[in-house]
Length: 580
Image: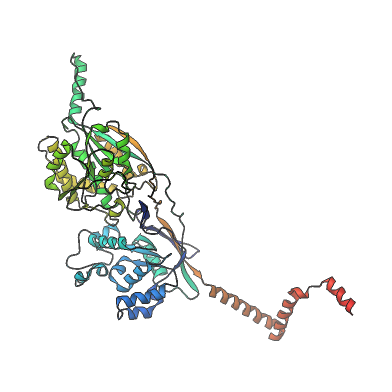
């Protein structure tokens, strides 16, 4: 589910809310991300609990405010509910949030704007996140816009801040809705009535550790004009009973170019939506397949490959390289990665083949730089998919907007839901033109507006997460639409099983959590109820007996009669008679 759900549990005074937690995982024995264990506890409002500190905070330095919050928050484990706007713009809420991240067992639920309220680019001439700005940008005025509306640059800055936090608390996010704001108002913004406390607990099963990873690669051979023509000539010759045999290219010896991208997704906020950084390379592959279909590939066989296991050192690439029968005939693998930025980089790790050199020369004007980094055979962590092909002795390159070598899960931007269709369309057109030059197809006209429209259409279909750790991604509707699309374009279609878990890599099934927020009575309340009941019973018995002394005498007599010493014991009676 993409949107949050919340509803009142009648008769219990509680509200259930579906939230999405930031992931924690291990890559090559190195821990990343956030804690995944949820502890039951109390929800609280630091503002409402310490109004004196709120009043004095404007006069305090940052260090003084941080110390004051630490003194009040260190003795208890808190669960806070905050709006993203308050964290980014309000100094007190920002320091409260940052202090909570240092608490073991703490939890914060952040209400974020829906994707429809995230605008592209940066706010003009102002800032939406003054608490995250550097000292040089501190003179910018704060934007006076809708508190639920942010620009993409602001969301990216918040993601960068989260990545830099060594959080000990669980961080959950929920899309802004009436139910989420109601939970915040009832359980996270005010002090509960006297004798009660706001609490929360999880209704979902705990995240389970992934022991076995199983998924599929999908690949197919693109239809070409040469094959169509050969097929037509063969059928005509059979009808005319021509003695000459039409020679078809031998697929076992034909040179091949593979264009690949990962079909699975992963990010810190895995269960919420698919990030554009996950989708852009896949969408580029789908559009290139459409543009190259039924063209004369001049002796080359064009294979389109969708891999899985991307977070496991790109295990899908290993599977393809080790099990594809004609892998020795593959002269070039073009891996398409994140293409959300206007700049494009070409990464490689091995000596180029002849066709790769030609392709790199043809696309040179469209890339910012060509980066070559060798790959060690025993490297515990790989950064791009071409590195896994290189390690399997297959020449490959990666085209991406990412310049630095950053681990795949860490370079995904979970709050970037849509890419700029104009930018991605330009990258697709440049790659297509470089391919047509490499295959000597001449100039081919492209309708760029159609490419942009298809990008928007694919983004709408591929919004749901496709993580192989939480289930079979091929049951997801967006993936099914890709398979149907491939069936129309490919002359042959195949799958490969990808099943492996690497030592030193640990993940958990990150699914949305159902959190129950409710109000409970304190122990003092129950003690007061018991005392009030005793007073009421004593008063009524005094009225019946006519005197409180008589009522007290009845109570003490009853207590003495029920005590162990007042119970008759025959042995004690005999000893007393002998003494007398």
